Amino acid sequence: MKPPIVLTAFGTTTRARQRYALFEERLRFAFPGHKLYWTFSSRQVRHFAKQRHGREHLGPVEVLQALHKKGYEWAVVQSLHLMAGHEFYRLVEEVQSSPLRTAMGLPLLYTPEDHQALAATLTAAWGDLEPDEAVVLVGHGTDHASWTTYLALQHFFTGRLPNPVFVGVLQGYPDRDEVLAALTASGARRVRLVPLMLVAGVHVQEDLAGDEDSWRQALTAAGLTVTLDNQGLLDYSGVFEMFQDHIAMALDAIPFSEQVSEVSLAGSKRWTPLL
Image 1: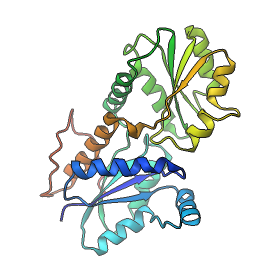
Image 2: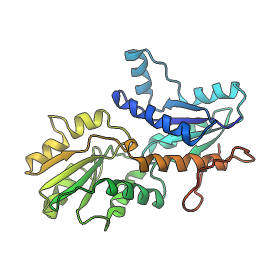
Image 3: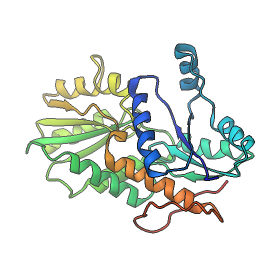
Image 4: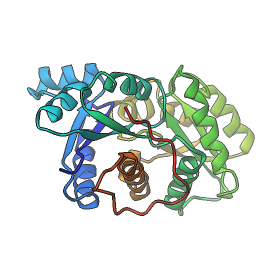
């Protein structure tokens, strides 16, 4: 049996979960013969889905236990998180208690090559920027040491566009005031506001685009003309390809596996934890 692939996202309580279905559909073509399973790492999201919609979502270990009972010896657990922060390392720790051996697929941003790939994907999608337009990407933010991921990503935008690109977060650093100060210094008059989140869920609806204390409201109040990109990162083909590569590397890390992925990998091998 080919190792199954367990897709593990933080989850969402909005219609943005439909993006997961499209993502899964593309993966079925990329990895034929591999069973795909979903789990949400957020207990709150799993509880909401059960209470509001009557849908039962198993946790990561529960899914792996069920696969073990079906006779599988190995599985890939693919993190659908932006970076290696609290959620990713909690996932790594959690699956260690599973009776099934696992290879961890890394989150979207882990290596310098990942940052370069995401910067290239996004800048290619911004071909219609006005000369006086800046781009502001907004992520969730974290108090984990991985907060520097946001600064690293901004670094890899340097020189890719004649327009300035800034990265900010909802919680932590760089915050909205920091980004506003940089925008003012840049002389930009227009802003393209881009979610730095895998799906355009509640944070995009409320924190970026909402009518009260949102980024769009604050930027508009500062005299800037704001255009919101109302899509998450999973909507970009380049992001799908990045996750496809991460899954392929995890499959290739499984020892003695006869089901070697046919997906070609760019660059050198990267660390994939085997648990």
